[in-house]
Amino acid sequence: MDKLIITAALTGAEVTRSQQPALPITPEEIGTAAAECAQAGASIVHVHARHPDGSPTQDKEVYRQIIAAVRARCDVIVQVSTGGAVGMTPQERLAPVTLLPEMATLSMGSVNFGGDVFMNHPTDMEVFALAMREHGVKPELEIFDSGMLSTATRWLKKGLLEGPAHFDLVLGIPGGMAATAEALMYLRAQLPSGSSWTAAGIGAAQLPIGALAIVLGGHVRVGFEDNVYYRKGELASSNAQLVARIARLSRELDRAVATPDEARVLLGIKPRR
Ligand code: KMH
Ligand code: ZN
Image (tube, rainbow, N blue to C red; front, top):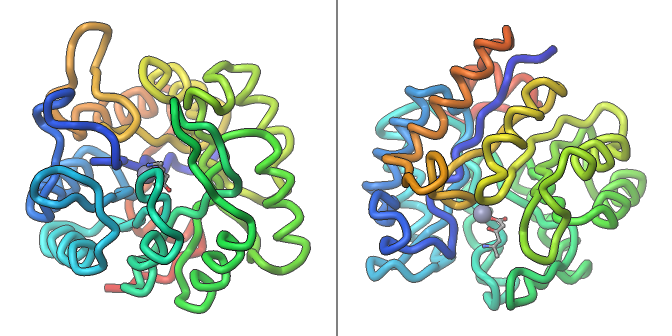
């Protein structure tokens, strides 16, 4: 089995300081959280930008500051969000890709997102895919429901995406696939051959879905974007605390944890340092 790639989804677009007092918001806070997570075993940080008041933004300058703050503190793969927040325009969402991060997310379809709709029109996402290819940015294909995997498979055949692809199977968004073992196995069975995959369980599902991914040979995403608790009724003290638990669990299960350079090799990413 390959070494485990741990992604720390540090901030997201929706979580607030009142829900999680340790949420990193400013570029400096995000840089510090990234370094703590890298120290704890993360090889990728998935980042979203916020204005100083905490509201989400896709402002390229803020992303530039975030990438600089992370790179100044540690070596870790920076994966920018092109999902941004519900309601942002495709043009806004794509902006950070032109900063040449090592990775960016690419959502493979639209999904109800709680009371909202997270719109990912195929025409827009094709533009995103081509921009990532043009800039040499490795996409992580975000899968919220099973039909999105068939879109990815078609796009790989069409050459819109280059294989081997890397997927993030997101389980437990209200409106998307449920966070169950059966749903994870179902998605895994349909992945294009040669793909790698990460599992992200939302809320209380973060730990059990992560544990399952470790034993199934997938990779794991944790962090405040998806879950703010360490256990029921107890907030996590930091993103790094969640990363450290997954790293510990993986080592106990005799699966070593990948360094950022090992993750680059596994994902076919050329380092930009
Ligand atoms: N904030 C969500 C609407 C991504 O980063 O690519 C979308 C999201 C996905 O977070
Ligand atoms: Zn995100």
